[in-house]
Length: 181
Image (cartoon, rainbow, N blue to C red; front, side, top):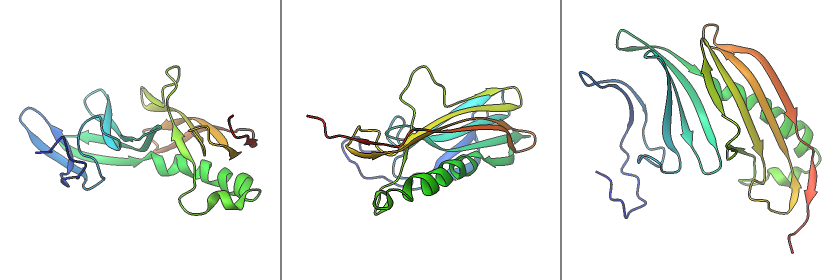
């Protein structure tokens, strides 16, 4: 049981379950930092029929860590880790295009953040055996001053072949934001 007045994570696992009759199909993770629904970092899910589910973490600015689970005969048949494949595109552009010009922006915890606060864009949606992705990232979503980087990936993930069919990666303009007055 979680104490709603506490920020302490009780370390409860997040589970993929069958409801009737109840059975645990897979322990997805433990100790991510948040186990309550709606909290920062809490897992969320979107189903495609009864046998495929996409699970991700709802972070402060956007969604991260997308994984697709295929279920057959009450067992996890296949796990597709889509997110590492998405991140490769952003990492490559971040390092080669932005950090070469502004190396200090990569020091410490400075990095980029995936952002999904636009109502007109779905980060991902199932369409048959495909997963349509529209992912946006930037390094200063809080409008802080200094060098600003952004990029967007639109792609189609093939659930049968477990890889991208198409990827349209669009680097944004690198600019230096001024201090707001």
